[in-house]
Length: 144
Image (tube, rainbow, N blue to C red; front, side, top):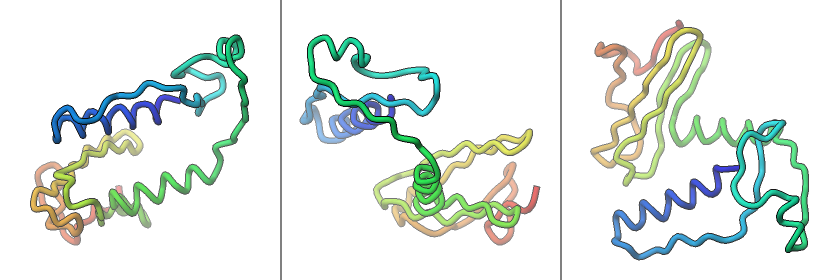
């Protein structure tokens, strides 16, 4: 699974960009995993290669509703992206030091590019919602 490695590498890069070159990028043995069957990508040694030089413990974890729930909680509570009754609402609650984030959402044949600007540093609340340059009432995108 590339996600843990990418998160760590990104954290180190961001920390070094802001604070100077203070954090080394450590390369160590990391667990590998996959969200697909068959696996389409991995980081680190294959199980077969690792067994040649190390004791290896493996497990199969089924990513079921628990992962979907955690993903939904993060998207709905941190990013504030809430789809309810055919309306798309925004209620972000993000760290005040996040200047912005962007989310791409595809629904049927439409692609929505959602940019949340937190340059004021409040971390929450919605000043306005625009769709194709037009301000929308009630800070929602109506049924589509």
